[in-house]
Picture 1 (cartoon, rainbow, N blue to C red):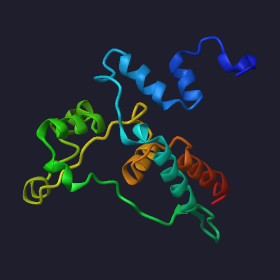
Picture 2 (picture 1 turned 30 degrees about the vertical axis):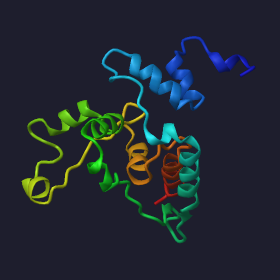
Picture 3 (picture 1 turned 180 degrees about the horizontal axis):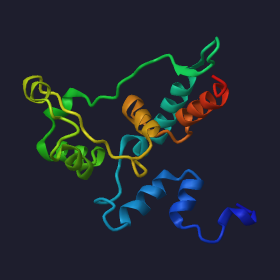
Length: 176
């Protein structure tokens, strides 16, 4: 921090929180912006940062390098983050609070408005009882790779593992 470029003119607190990987501060700052949500979210990776760091390390350890003409990185595990079925046994108010912390209700409404982008199939939603939910995202929600890490491992990609893998692939395979 003891360098002139650490706090360049024109940077907001949001810029600094992003630059110094302070997702806790970023969530607080973004929640205070008009229309930025109902407050600070307490998602599992914020509540248990040590466990989230362990999960991120494990995810990084599953990244492999493909051999051959296209040396792209790949993950050798395919997890899917799901909420435990036991949540349905919790009192309604606890369920609602839990879902309020994890889901982005505004995004959900937008995605389900006519014409619906998600949950449009009655066979899946009604007959099979399965629905897609929009998870709250620490940023603008516009990074598919960050969302992918959140939905597969249940943590935010603070180390930009997937972005780095994509960047390496594009750099190493640009000649193809």
